Amino acid sequence: MSIALDFDAVKTRQQVTWASGDYGAVAALIHPISELLVTAADLSAGARVLDVATGSGNAAIAAARCGCVVTGVDYVPELLERGRQRAAAERLAVTFVTGDAERLAHPDGSFDAVLSVVGVMFAPDQQRAAAELVRVCRPGGTVGLASWTPQGFIGELFRTVARHVPPPPGLRPPVEWGDEARVRELLGEAVGDLRTVRREFVFRFGTPEEFANFFRANYGPTLKAFEALPEERRPHLHADLVELARTHNRASDGTVRIPAEYLEVVAQRLTNSY
Image (cartoon, rainbow, N blue to C red; front, side):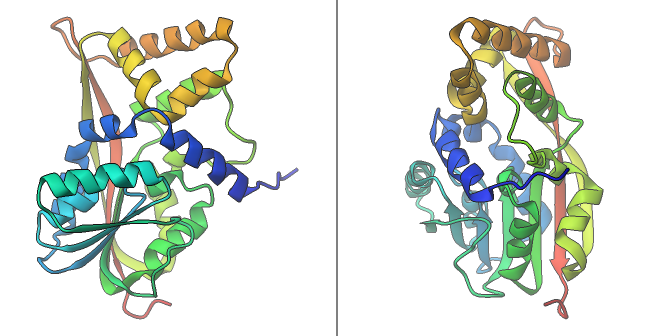
């Protein structure tokens, strides 16, 4: 039996989740992902670029460094303010606006490139969000995405957390955006020349416990999972996160080095689409 999912209710909970903790601290670690995506998208100076689910502005700032005219959109005002501060510190002109990835407030074909780095993948209505990415990209323009893969470390992190605090029934896993077949399905026939590359970002911590503590304090989904558990069950989730880090650790010097796979996608909107 299919389950009718209230996407708006899920989205409201997500806003609270991403506003909790300090996602800006996590984003600061993974900024290189955005730099690589912007390089792969081969943006031109002066190009109009939209960074969807920008968070604290990683991809927006990377694009602005290329001389692009950049807008970053997100539904968490606190993260947008962090992005404004970062852009101002680098003297980069980036416009940050509050908005919904599933209902972008921009006309069709407004941008030469539309990007999202581990952002739009969390939209509850995946198909609608994908359609919006394509809609606001001009014919012949570029759609660039970076998404954690199902089989990678972050995919395993989500499954570990879900064993303790299950997601809403019927909600498709965000890491589906990191599956090539699924992302081709989502973007559909409106794009062509879709190229994918599997890359790894390496998380580095002093100890597995440091990893678990960092994600518990800063990463909204993990923080909220701990809050949702009774006090006596929280140590079990913490222990599982520590074990997860140990299992995926590739360092041999006593520290922690964890490769986290993500899928980089660069596609072109077809001129005859829509």
